Each structure stands twice: as C-alpha cells, then as structure tokens.
Image (cartoon, rainbow, N blue to C red; front, side, top):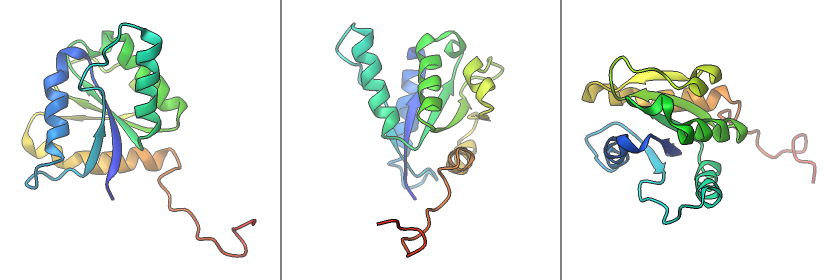
Length: 153
C-alpha cells in the first residue's frame, strides 16, 4: 500500500530530501511512498503562512520522515514539524543521514524509531519502519467493514 509521507528536513539537507523523494520513482529501489514536502520553497517570509502550508502537507500524510543531518537538532522548523505530526496523530520515524549526529529532542520524546541511511541497502528498511510507525498510532489497523453491528446509520 502506497503511503503519503511528509518529509521533514533541515534546509542544509535539501538535496538528500530530494534524493529520498526521487527514489520513490526508481523501480530498482524498494520504497513505496508518495513524498509530501516543501522541497520547492514557499515564496513567502510570513511564518504563519509557511506554517499553514506545512500543516496542510502533514495533515494529508500518513506518517512523517525526519531526515537527521548535522544541523537538524538545532532546527526550530523540524521541531515544529515533529510536534504538528504528533498533534495530527501521524506515525514518525527518523532517518539519520550523517553518522553520529544528535537526534532531535522531539523524536526522542515521541519514542520514534531512528534508522541509519549509510548504504543503498539501508533504504529497504524504510517502508517497514513507516508501517510500524503508523501502526503504533493505532491508525494502521484495518477498519471493520460496515455491517449491522458496526454501521450506525
């Protein structure tokens, strides 16, 4: 099942975020999600407007991937995106793109699974981690079919 996933990243890691998003189009790579992101910058300096655009993308997603680079743990925007993802009940995973970098506090508090992206083989873990994160929110379970006992109309 293809999931819609919001990609959160610190601006310095934009090329890595673009690469992750492009992998979803590569038939030789085992990832199956549709990236929702702000890879193309919002043409505004208004933080309220930018916040609304990010929240729209998060709301329409099943989960959030936080790319963890050298400067990610200092990013106020990444922390906001983690918080908004939690508020909307989204599954969250972290993907460390640089070795031995600190994990953002919001991910640690949430108890999010953190994976490493050091080799091409690491990418094969991403889909299963997304599914585990969604299942942990309780939204990943399949809904009961409408029967006399489950449909109130």
